[in-house]
Image (cartoon, rainbow, N blue to C red):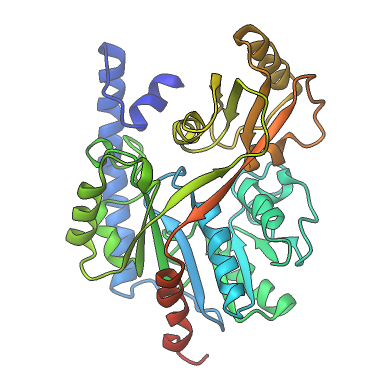
Length: 354
């Protein structure tokens, strides 16, 4: 529901219905916070134990539900590891898969690109398999099972776990936690009232913090202060995403189904003329009707090209494309390679023998 989505995204509730919904969600957040506290203390006090894999594990995660740019960061991190001579395998839950049970283990790539459809792989694993055709990708809700399968099949020297900061059932040697710095920290509440999976003190478990979309942020001082308060002494890096644009006939209609569509549209507006935009819910499954509606909207607004993300283009699959051309915008991760490599690769020296 748009009303609920606006509240969760941090927009102030306007009107009686919105205020009532915000009150209900806030009450639900109290119960969620209590459950999270019990779970956290169970792991912190070793009442519950995490399983270990026989090789170093680097996790790329976040504090929020989607929208931090985790997929391009994961891809850039894997490329950096390969550049330094490592042999990573990616494991993921495979969220967004509609043709596979989450408990079912699946190999998405054996190191030669995706070998299953997006609806089997899940959105992010499929895209990672396309972006990193030489890196194996394995998915399963049980990340330990996915990791063991990856080790047995491909003999990596490390595992990169996509979106697993809250998956404490599996021990990791390095937690790289991302925060979308373009969002106002004052507007972020705990789920389901807001997008936070955990409160800010959870940053104390991080090995390194990445502030994504730093170039689009008005709130960098606040986020630096939050990181210092909750994870003092932990390395912090600023990250930007630069669109990789092919030649495009302008103006364009931008569309996407990602966690933070506004950030995508703002990055386009800085570089090309936009006639209109259309945001679908995150992990939306596109239909032929969606493309027909986009084509009509483009005609009404004078757009000459439809522009979308790599993640969305992968999900269009074999749908009949409209007469108006569809162009994909790639993403280049901009960060301090030397600093990232220094912190990430230190895990191999620090990891205990297994």
